[in-house]
Length: 216
Image (cartoon, rainbow, N blue to C red; front, side):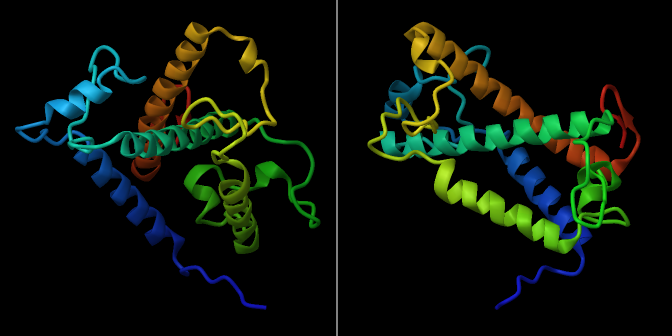
């Protein structure tokens, strides 16, 4: 049986990840190309998410001469990243408030609150053991490959609709206007959460204290 090996210094991995994320975020505010094709504007300026105050906002010109498939792919990635960021930000808020699952997390009797929060869960004296981290990665990979995706032919209504003919939670009872409103709310909350979790990652490295979140 082969073994999964990770770099011995997760601190460097985390710092590189933060720097890469910062570079990507900074690029999002780079000046737009001087000439943006009118076809891209006319095709996508009315899409969900193109709303006040920015309207259709594509500073990197990623939709220049793009077709619908290209737009759908970018929207798919945006929605998924937004959902992950919302879970990550909420996890930070909840655990830093001292709220943990009861009981033990392993057979050794370690409680859920015995491990670090945020970056401390990856590196330091209270970090999650490597075996536990591998389990998390495998579970995320399973969700990514088998569940959290659009499965054709299952009746999904839009990009990012992961019901796949099984989950509903009352979605079909909403009218079209309500559905659009809820999708727009999710999209905006996801965008805010991506900036939020990036900010928390940076403040963890800088230290100090943040309102609501507390000591970093």
